Length: 298
Picture 1 (cartoon, rainbow, N blue to C red):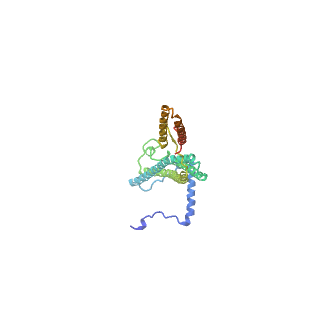
Picture 2: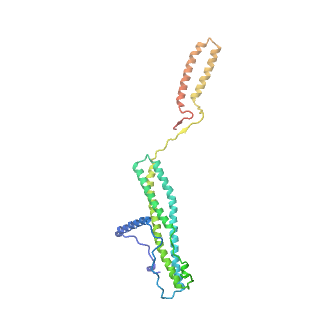
Picture 3: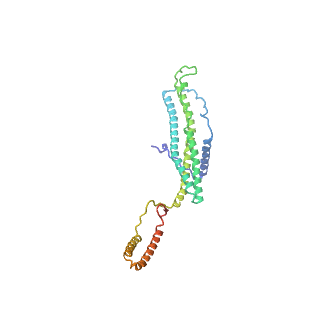
């Protein structure tokens, strides 16, 4: 096939025209923001009546006019589908945005003031853009007027059936198609605004997550607290030594009771053992400072 009849993709903007291109983008962005808050009429302005055809209108002409009318209806359907898909993305972004905002307010109070301010500012910008995008999407999917052939195309003003005319039918289809395409162009601006504003909200949300990640990284960990509930059984060499000392003390007391003559010789070492037991008990009391029902850090 001759390459002259094959379309090429759109070329890149040359460097010398970048400044002009950026100015056009900013101008369109201002128009999109202006269009969100400005009220509009419910239908386009009426156009001039189509002239009477000089050539004979055939079935092929009527089919072509019907195809043009169907194309306008199909475009309207696609625009509404795009607006509804934008709603689905917003449903995902709104809870994520709210969660990040609550986290940065409540948990990041000990972080750097600059990082915290940057994160909050980016989240606020993302929320504002998301709100504007939501308004634009709502206006895109709201009920709009749509022109179609109705009773006037079949019944005249006197209430009588019109004599069928292919030219009249074709002109009616073309009129409806032109009016619907004008309304589609109007809806396309709202859909475009919803997409651009939602994309801006996502970019601002990504920018906000960068300082938030640093906040999470340097967030101090809370100390772990343990609670001992119920009796505590401690088994250690100290307790074993105490049990042995108590057993020996019992034997010495038995000897003291059985033999009064040996009381003096037994009382002296008995006093020494009692002092050692008392010292060990004091030591065990210091080691078991964390008792049942108290809290401490491991």
